[in-house]
Image 1 (cartoon, helix red, strand yellow):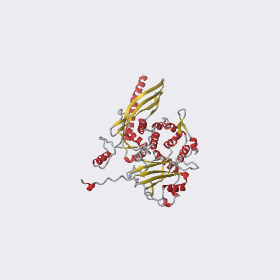
Image 2 (cartoon, helix red, strand yellow):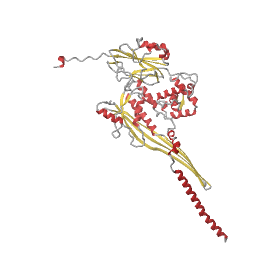
Image 3 (cartoon, one colour):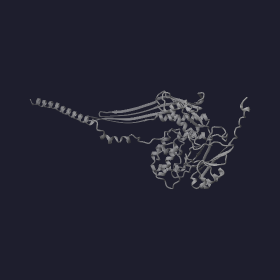
Image 4 (tube, helix red, strand yellow):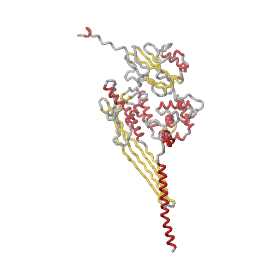
Length: 554
């Protein structure tokens, strides 16, 4: 008779326990709801103050490059040596009808043309295309000025046309998986790989007739890969279940792939147009697909002092730093300034730090493809020990006028020249005009620093700015000459005061450019300077038209 009583007591305790759980849940929900009510703004001030700092990127920006960035510089040098005249060029939009490659390909075309023209001035891009649907400030001002005859657009001679021809997704795709299941544990592993092909076709056309030139085309494709792998683990401990998942994915970006295709296409089109052996620029060792990845491994494998020594010795060899008996500290002001100037010269983001970007650009000349087809380090030991010979100081000058004969000009012709030095050096340029005056052109008010960078074309005058410091205009019949002198040390600290005259004023006490060159040799020594002279003739003025008889009346 007692068992039913005990059974009744047990069953009656369950609703009470459920009521207690329900009350606890209600109390917890009320507490959470109370915590979820908005706080006063001043109580969130400290928390919100971290937003501005947290919004900043975690890494520094880097220069966007491709496998053919050095090939573009190679083409630039090749066209400069061939004295290719400046050509006005433009381009159409580079469409992607697949909608799977969302990149600004036209802007990549402009960048590639610019990088191929830094020293050669081979191409100047004419940005005249107007988008009727999206009028911006520049387009509106252009329309107003053109309608009022206050602006003149130069007609380009060439234009680039093309588009993304195809995007074949997952041409190759593999997937592997395996798993083990038991009463209390389950384990699974999965791996997948895929390959997508992106094609780009580009052509060069004659703008005047809007006809594509036969044979001036480029059709290339690149493979964009992706891969992933994952591990799943599930188990049970008593009445509780545990799940664990680890995954790793890799997707190669289409943006970098498109930049590679655009750079390659522009090199081919420029080489075919100029009839230059452009393939020499496509066989460089740093066009190897694994070039930057291999350098990154070497960068991560070394320590910071070793990397700093390698970069420092390279900067010494290129003239950015004087030779020091002891290596500089990585954070020294002298080294950071030199690194900053080197970054500015190669188009990198200027930070002054020996980052991977600096490391890769400094040591790329010391990497080659071995007989086994793998990348190998060449001369790194000598570079670390300071045994590498400095780059010899050399100077290169040329006249940039787009005419066949650059040695004779009619009176009143604007003359354009450029000068480049092989390493960072102090540069001075002088003009000997038809009146016999010796005038210093460089440095001047707009370019007061005599120290110039390596392999950077210095324009005389700088025709790329709206208001240059001077212009070179051929005078009366006779001959003129332009001489530039580059030295490892600043010679003006040892020159006579009368020779350190202001720019664009005749120098007294010097009769010829040869006399000026001898003063430089006396100041710094003949082995620490180089000089080059350009000469041209001024033709006699054209004969005046015969005067009409009777005052021009019949």
